[in-house]
Length: 286
Image 1 (tube, rainbow, N blue to C red):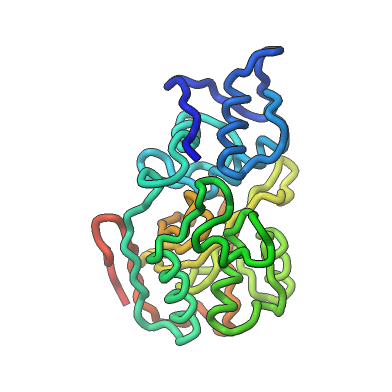
Image 2: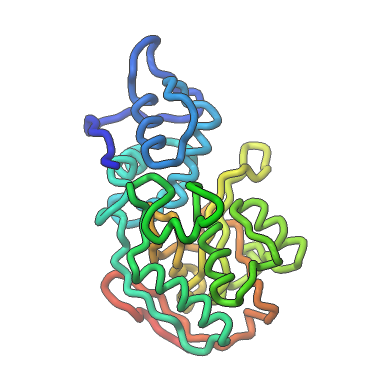
């Protein structure tokens, strides 16, 4: 679905922002954009409340700014988020990174990365745009129907690789998956763990009280930089498609990683490199 056109200069929107009475202003416009992209299912009422804030955070977790950088996940609509709202999919949200699996990984990790990259190579995306459905997305959401699908994508890949759901249950909610992984001893805060290709990265947002909210995003770690401060990803429902991207450890909404393989990931001597749009093997080390 094509985004609604809007003036270049839009005001900063945040929790509590409100359009003038009986006027469809910038809050209504933003709610309409989020609704058209499948992030917001509330009323277009001109009030930037908790549901609009949550939709904005989830949108920010899964989209890039005009410089190709991940958006800050703060629930506020500034210039970069306004731009992304106007350019939520298609060419302007593509990273143009050619994926490559690092050497030195176990067979299980290679299998997961191969399947996730195949869905990327197939160009899996939402049709129509913003529908959380269509094309290869329908296969991922079989039996569920249209839904935000980043977590469903991870679990679908796992079942394709190993013939059963991870932990014998299909998960579609990131916060729940993180909680279950912690109970299994498979979740690691980013401050205490260096990611390994094949791990799941997890993004959650904390409210002002320090509690995680329901908004979240998840995907696969594809490659890790030599210093461990950035990593490539394969993630579903990013720019409404399966996308290969790059993220930084410093992102405030990145809480940690899930290692479900039963190995000591940090002892694996894998090839370390970060992939970008210009090179498929920048700064490669082993």
